[in-house]
Image (tube, rainbow, N blue to C red; front, side, top):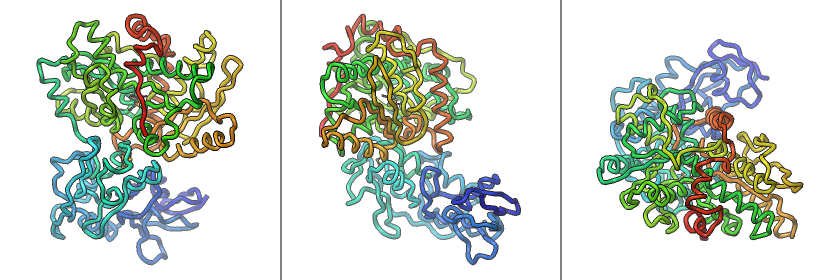
Length: 575
Ligand code: HC0
Ligand code: SF4
């Protein structure tokens, strides 16, 4: 431990800590716009300057390591004046359009401008005039609003290993954009939205489609239905003052009814259907030697896009089962519409996702129109839904809990766990074990594949056979897992794994690019615990025990992997 003094307060911190960490340890907040707990510090913004006794100049707290006996001053008159000037200079090239900005009231620059009492344009005002990139339909890059903090570039390159964004241009023309100055849609971008989740300002936001959803709800001729993804329920509370991880399923259903949806469904139900298909796919490959192992999960659209772009040799390993979002869309416009005698042509499916790539998934292929219509009409992020709830004047905190609508609304503990890294695998193992042994699971929880470690592995013995498992999250961790499989293939060895789960975002969907801002690992853990608690509290914890799932197979789909299930619930991948 290293002993230092921050504003006269003595503290011992771990070697390798920065001055920023030391200040945090004594509850002092040093302002910064470029440092994010997920990222290595780069000192770009210059706001975190501090004074260190005996040192010349004002070092940046985020990049300066502590040394024994340092006496640090984080706030005084001169430091505050300099920080204010730095802010004024950033603002001199930033649009004054807070009122119409997607980050109004969640922008870190706006908050600091308010805290520092910035009142005038002392340095004049000049914008780059570089316009916007709306090419992906999922994300909007607004170059004028970029403050060059580098967070988006680092998350995209260092954490996601995608390298869609880099810094281009010089001086005023500096901007975060794909190398070669091409459109984001032409770049390797996989629409994960981690750049937008880490952007401190409105320079990268999701494409706002709330107006489309309002139009559906106002259109009298429509029957408008909605589904909510697993991880939305444990994160949306942060928008309404709840602790991260609070499970708000009942209030969410109630809020969606107040918004005017004609039926409220739960993606957790269709996650259970995904498991019925995917677990059977796994058993076919594992037991009956049909097609290649490992089987790799495919419900994360950023991951499927990444695989198609960079690892297309794994196409034969991909589960052909569609994601729960798409399965919900097609079942609503076929099975549910028939049962309720509703014309699917007038049905509109809105889906609430933690994810910006889900906006892309709904049009990725003709197979996303399996009902004969667009299976899912529009995707809103958790953040967009929170805005709609506020627009409608709904007092979310005081809503009475509601239940979801029948036939596509009930879910098992397995379904809800989809929203966290490792959860799809645990859910699949519960059902695969049932298929392979015909017995109820002796073991429901697989501790080894829980938590935030980037690559998790375990071995499970089912019916005397060993099943080797890997779980990866954060696209930067995927390459290593795939490389191990490739090496075994090349040398003719047994595959190192039989079953692999991949989620593009760190933490899985609970850390999705469309979730409430300012996520950290501490918040990811709380959201994750919220889903594990939801599973623990459920009477039904396996997808195959979900009575509504059994009903949809009995009345409509026949059995997992039937011809009809294949036609409606499965898809293909292309290099
Ligand atoms: Fe997910 Fe999903 S779990 S990808 O993370 O599989 O977005 O929450 O809705 O579709 O269920 C996201 C979350 C989903 C899907 C489910 C899967
Ligand atoms: Fe990179 Fe993901 Fe942002 Fe695309 S959406 S630029 S892949 S961080």
